[in-house]
Each structure stands twice: as structure tokens, then as C-alpha cells.
Amino acid sequence: MKQKIIICGIFFFIFSLLPGLYASDLKVNDITLSSTDWGAQTASIKLSNTGEDYKFVVLKSEVITLDNENEVAPFTKAAYFIEPLSDNDFTLPFNIVAGYGKIQIDISFYEVIDTLDQLLESQRFFTKSFPVEYKISEELKSVISDEIKFPKFVEDNDFFSNHLSQVLLTLIIGGKTINEIADLYQTNIEFVNSMLQEYQKAGLVSSDGVTASINFMTINKKQAEAIIPSIDKTVDNLYKVITKNFAGYDSTLAMLVSEGRLSDDPHDALDLGTILYQKSPVTLGLFLWDLLGREFVNNGQPFNIFEGSDPCNAFMGDFMYMMIGAENYVGDSYYYASMDPKNDAIYCGLGRHNFICPYNYRELAEKKRPVRLGFDRKNRDKVYLYNEDNVREPLSFMMDGTIEHLENLKVEMAKNFAGSYYDTNYKGARYWCWDLVVTKLMKKLVDSHVIEKDDILIYRLQKTEN
Image 1 (spheres, rainbow, N blue to C red):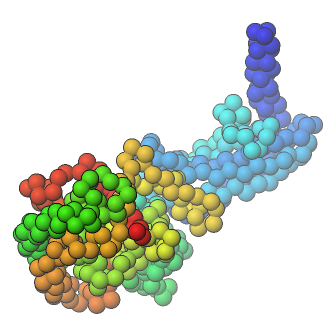
Image 2 (cartoon, helix red, strand yellow):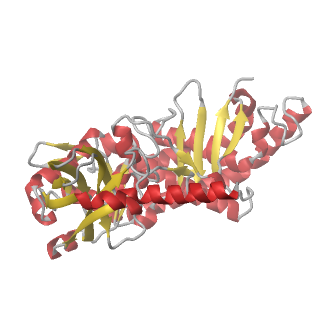
Image 3 (cartoon, one colour):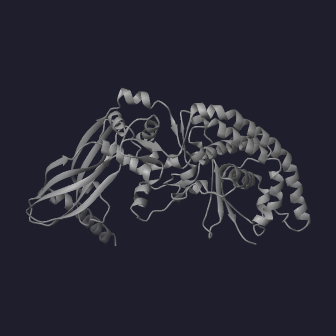
């Protein structure tokens, strides 16, 4: 038996070396890049087979960011069947993501036995590298000094995570034409238009080919600083009201237990009202977001920030905003309601969300290829089942005296953002504002021990019928 294993091992070793043994018949005569400008480019390749055997060859292009070794390098590969004694011309695409710094474009050649197998270093017989450096102009440096902040989830979108895509929006707000933006970027108009088209697909930008305009809420440091006193006042007022109302809330729970309408066991999974014992998800999800948040942000209607997109390709539609130069004035919570009748649920959280987005998710989704969202197994969301009828009465006590503070904050928001397209983009501004209110208020309630601290603040609150 041992001899058979040794023989098989030797055979496999020799078999794996075969491509390298015969790769000398394959000659790379020329590689020419169409351009090293940002965007989609191609490599024109001349490859000869001087031998008398058929070959399977895989060509691979890879764009490596030298300034960030941890960044996953985008690549493209294509497989070809090479006839004996032949000269071949191939075109291999690659994409240069917009950015400044040093990159390296690698064009590699592999001789393989099966084009579906994973590529191995032992199969690679030739690589040519093209180093490129992109230097930022002093004029552009002066324009992009302000930090840019997007909502949670949007900031994880591959498109928005690119700094030049972010800066494009600030240049548009500053009144720059498409020609002027191309000059600042030291690139061509076609590339700038290609970035604009991505925003246009999501309805976030309008363009006439000469100029462009933003279709969502932008908030600058001056506006944020002006409204912060009103936000802090709202937080203080709601804190006082909630602290007072919790006494009535607790009394209502005791009454429901005495009447047999609520289990006295907080962990009774069969009772669709026992979520009421868990003050953290009730306060964050059912009360601050699904009741007060809906009222403040969307005039009482449930809303889904991912309508028309998803957590890994988020654009947020009416609820989109961008903060310029005031990244410290952004909250750390989120909320969205599922609009699927088969999955009537509230998703909310405070702190880091637990979605894991696969590499190239957005690109694959656009090509209608199968792709799935992942979840961080070490940071799972907590799931609670509840019935609206079972939780309505205690929550009504929590609502007492809160609406006036929401209405006052709405008035202050309208004053502060007057003339900033607030009339058409108010939902984005209100979502930003309420996120900050919730973040500050939850911290205050936990710090003062009004509600217990929960180690994981990621919740799925599943609405269920009795």
C-alpha cells in the first residue's frame, strides 16, 4: 500500500511539471497596453506556439495597488486553445481603478491541462509588469481637503469607497463643469462621464453633458454645527420623557402578566410579547426607530433605505446624504423595514453592522450573476419574534409627550437647511439627523443605567401573527 502511495505521488509530481516542461514552445512576442489612463483598457498580445503540440493557455491581467498591500487586486483572465506552429493575437481587458499613487499592471501567462482548474504558480511561464504612478495636482489637493462621510452601508459600497468618486461629488457641488473636473483629475472627459453614469443609474446625479447637479442631501460643517444645539436639546428632552415613561411601561407589563396576557418568563419564546422585557431592542428598534423614527423621517410610514439596492450596493434613494467636513457629526445607528409580505421584519442596530460583502459584489450583481450577502458569524444579529397587538399598549405609554419634541426639531431642521434643496431632499437630512439623535440618546440611556447595556446591538425584530 505504501509503495502505491509513493508511485502515485511521483506520478502527480511529474504530471504537475508537464506545463513547465513544454512551455518553452510558447513565445510571448509582444504586449502593448492600449493606455494607462483610469478605466477600462486592453492589452494586445502576440503569442506563438513553435512546437507541434496543442496547448491550453490562460492569460491573466492584474492591477496591483503598491501603496496598499492588503487591497485585493482586481484581475481578468481568459482561456485559449493554441494550435501547433501558430502565431496568435489576443486582446485581454483590464481595469484601472481611479486613484493616486503607484500601481503595477501584470500580464501573466499560464500553460494548463484544464482551463477550469485553479491557476498555480508552477503553471506560469511568463509575466510582464508595467509600473505606473499617478500624481495628484496641487490644485486638486486644495479642493479636496475636506473629509467626506456617507451613511452606514453606503460607505461600504465599492463605488463610494473610491476617493475620486467621492471627490467628484464635491467638485459638482462647487460648480465645476465636466471639462474642469477632467482637467483637475488629469484625465479625459469620457472617464469623468463614466463615473457620472454610475451616479445617474441610481438617480443621485443629473447631467446635461456639460454640467452636473446632485439629487440628494449634502450637509456641510456649518449646517451641522448650526443644528447640533437643537439635536442635543431634543435628546435631553426625550431622555427626560422616556425615563419618566418607563415607570408606566413597567406597570403595564405587570398588569399584562396579572391578566394572563403576558408570560412572566422573559425567555418564553412561545409568547409573542416577551420582547417587551428586552428594553434595548424595544427602545432602539420598536420605539426610537419604528415609531418615533418613522414619524420624524418619513411622516409615519415604514421605509426601507435599500429600496432599489441592497446592503452591499447601497445608494439609499430618498434617504441618501453626504456629510462634508464634519465627519464627527454622524450617528452610528441604522434602521430599515422589510417590505416583503413574507418577511415582515425590522432591522436595526447601533455600531458596526454584520453584513459581509463579497469582493466584486456590485460588479457581479450588475451582470446578473449569482451572488450572496454574507454575515459575520462572530457578530450575529439577535432575533426577536413579536406581535403588534401584544406590544401596542406598553409602547403607547412610551409615546406620551414625545411628539412635540419631534415637531420642534422638524421646524428647526427646515429653518437651518432653507435654500439647500431641503424641500425635495428633506428625508435624507432627517435620516442623518435622527440617526444622530438615536446614537446620542441610546448612549445616555445606557450610561445612566436606564436600560442595560447589550453587548451586541444588531437586531432583527420579526413581526408574527398569533
